[in-house]
Image 1 (cartoon, rainbow, N blue to C red):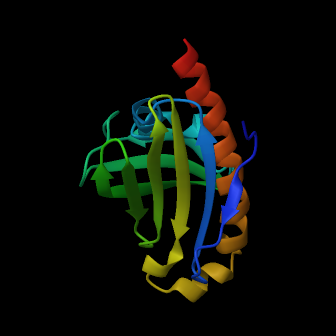
Image 2 (image 1 turned 30 degrees about the vertical axis):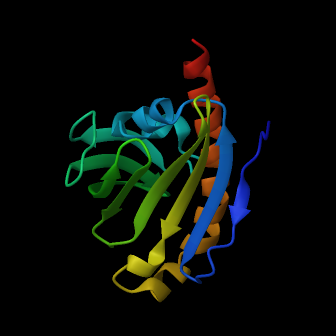
Length: 158
């Protein structure tokens, strides 16, 4: 059982990803991710503070707001662009960069989860270098996946 996530080489300069095996069914994990009001529970960046608008259950095309803080507080609106329950969900905000979770069931009680920050879809991908978005997001992904693992395994056991 891995208590840490591994970096995934995406082969693309504007994408960062990590992967972890979670001892929980894919549906349990997907249900956590698909509820934006739960994102602060597993966010490893420390920037997601609370869900502030939108449904408690995401779907393709759904929009949801998040209260964020990176130095100063701000709000961000996201739109779900990919939704294939229980294996894939992705959203983007006005900057067009995307966060994606891919869940691959290993068996009925364990799932490989890959999280990707995709800056290649941004309006101007090199601009994300200015705020070190690629490096910061790589670190945050690894922390997020460990937190998601702890949360999902706890829920699967109860």
